[in-house]
Image (cartoon, rainbow, N blue to C red; front, side):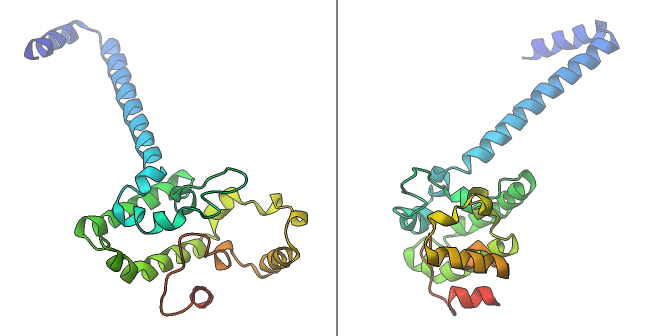
Length: 198
């Protein structure tokens, strides 16, 4: 190894500054490209269902409740993963969510949610955090897949059509009505509708 370094130093002493500069730029671009590819691969991996349900807190609680819901199994075969509802797709908001999620790992490492009882104890607060975020961003993650202008009112029931019309008129966001999709609604100090009205 030392011989390799000595040979490189000797060769560099006889190179022109242009050659050294070009070599340095090339090495920098290669290292930057590798780091960028590794970062993108890491972000993609942390958006998989397998990653999200990799710890037993998620797999045995909300992951188990997700199974069989309309977002898991449906007539169209389109399956939503945890990240589709809980991670923004845009780069900056996604990175901000990933940083926030890294702090949530602390709960896993300290055993804050490591039993069903502990999870249920904190469930309402966890759900309220998600509801608050979704209200603040106008259910943005829902709208990544569910586009209002692509919804066919003819294919909706009369009741659904009336509710969507009223929601649009009142500026109601998706999560204010569609919060029971998955996971299950937690018990808490008040109903979810009451919490969202505040």
